[in-house]
Length: 142
Image 1 (tube, rainbow, N blue to C red):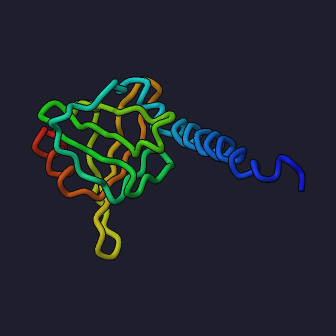
Image 2: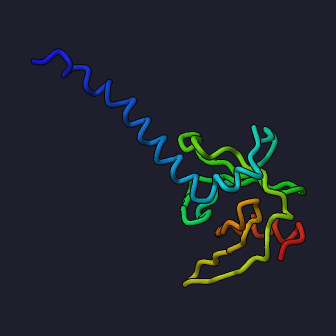
């Protein structure tokens, strides 16, 4: 047996991690990264109550069950799983950056679409969370 064969699985681990990190970075460039240019934060407040969003689309990328949101009177915090951290820093988006909300119903699911203003242009943000919609309405959004 060749001496490298027993070590082959251990050598593949860094390759798989690097590949997953590259995929995460490429996905972030399609929407999250544009928002991060204006709204990235170093850390999320520890006392913030956040919910897992079952459906989120930022730009063309779906983040189903991978994004947590927490709202404050000033805005909304968005974070991803730690495994997607490469290219996905925590975001704090003030309520003033949200445009008008468009509601769409397909079968029994309501989807809300809003465009977020950032320096590179508007980014589409879709979600199904009623709590996030209520917080947006309470903050003065449409």
